[in-house]
Length: 448
Image 1 (cartoon, rainbow, N blue to C red):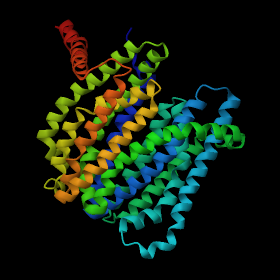
Image 2: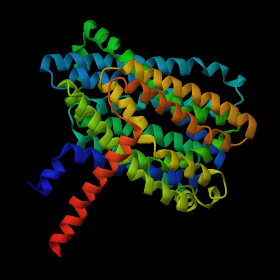
Image 3: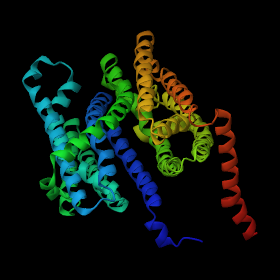
Image 4: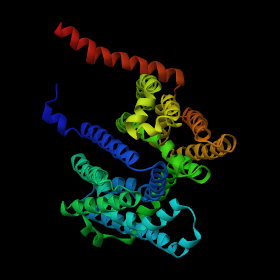
């Protein structure tokens, strides 16, 4: 039966995919403006600050986001209020702890020479506090599957940022200081919008219980370990580059990373859909179905990324120039982008290895997998920078990190799920051919 346009717009999977796509495009536009408005050093300092903030946010999110969904979604009203109140208590406690650590460092500013570190200390606390209501609201809306509200709030957040940056660029007054102010103001406005729309459910704070707080904390420590390790993995390159090569190198290296957002859109969407299918199959003890879904989704994405990698190889200079401006075309960024896109062909297998380990109740193994990748990343980055003294040293170390994760995931998962790399490619190819025949060739033949 064919869905009507209204039914499609109400479909949660469609809204999640469209939401991810729109926000990714808006985020890339934001990055394009930032790269054009400031010099490499200041862009690098901005992304260093964003990386440190993202690391702290990974702690807050890793500890509470999954726990919020698990313990709140679909529960009775009294239990829901108890859970949300406890979530609010823990979120406030974590945020205040971050703020106090940042404030404690203020007396030592005179001893610090790194401008990037100074910016982090000065702006970290207020940024964490300004984003708190919006962050907790996001967890609640995800649990309630209110994807339209999520999209609206994220558009408010990103839209105000684009307008503010554009205005300062037009007035020729854009600077790193103003960007940090815009970030805090934008977070504050989005948090205020969440409060006015009554999405935050802050009144539940008074329904918290010590028992529920302990329950959430006990559960959260497991998801926190994996989430924090994953964030450290994605942040390690930035920290090493900032320490050994400076903020300008961070700016150049971050540019191709931002372009990889267009790979993340289908990857996140396929993972979200595949997770629910694998979870249903696993709960029915149907491991053959789990294996089929794993091979189908990871295989289809692998074949999808092959033409994307080929296009990126030939149009890397154009893509880098479009996002960052002409001043970045003659840097290492295009070569790094080509390398990342070639690596992206193997991303689906790596990501689905990790997701499937979580689904079949082996999160500890997935955590070990991420730790192995983190150790490989730091080791190869340091060796690469030592011998090359350039961004290439970090970039060309990345494949070793990816391959280490794939191998660990493969041998761990093979004990429980029957699959091989060859089957992934065959399944993916067959599914792609079937999809093209059903959606492209068949309708065209009927019209003819």
